[in-house]
Length: 283
Image (spheres, rainbow, N blue to C red):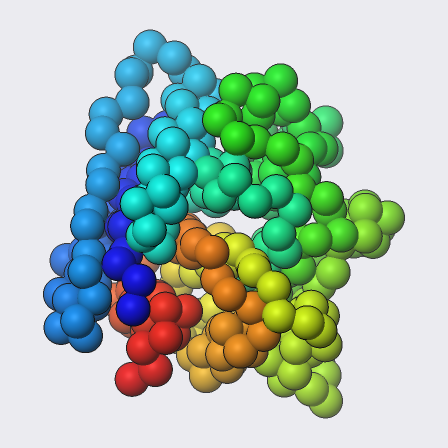
């Protein structure tokens, strides 16, 4: 199996270790690297280091993206699979930019869509803009400071597990050509079956983004924004099996896991199981 570069980006709102920013370190404490090494996989770990406090939240957040992009690019050049453990979803812009393969499909597991722009919301929650930034909907000038960044065509974005969405947001997503396996709704088909209908029919590469609040609250609280109607453990693993059977994963970002929430270790253990699924360890 290809060696793995674990890239630690333990930040939320540009601050290290708070809330979901504690998730990457907790995954390491739960034995992620030891599990991979026991399976015979060579593992290296890179930490983004300290981000200067003087730049403000936006400045720090985009510096995180830039550092993620550079580290992902270096991992790929070294023949390593980039596994980005991030506090929040904004790091995905850096992961995607670092691939050097613009417009690969991005399968985005999330309880939300992160498709808001600064003009769409009044509470200013920056992490709700990650996918909008990725697809060139906002923060265009700052996004261009991320090495290798080219906006993803929205029709290459596939959501899985997003739920309880506003009508106007659904209209924006539809108009942009984004695909979605919506959570929180009744369906005769499983999440995996519905996702399989949206994946490319021919084998190609893909980027996987795993926001842990795609998971249903009955499994555990991934973060304070988790809601019912998400994927169960078996749903998530079956969806990942669908992707791996159809596409070659170029990288995986795991984000939005807050170890301070109830049932958090169950979420962390599921995250590790998901990582193993993506890289081909099915046990």
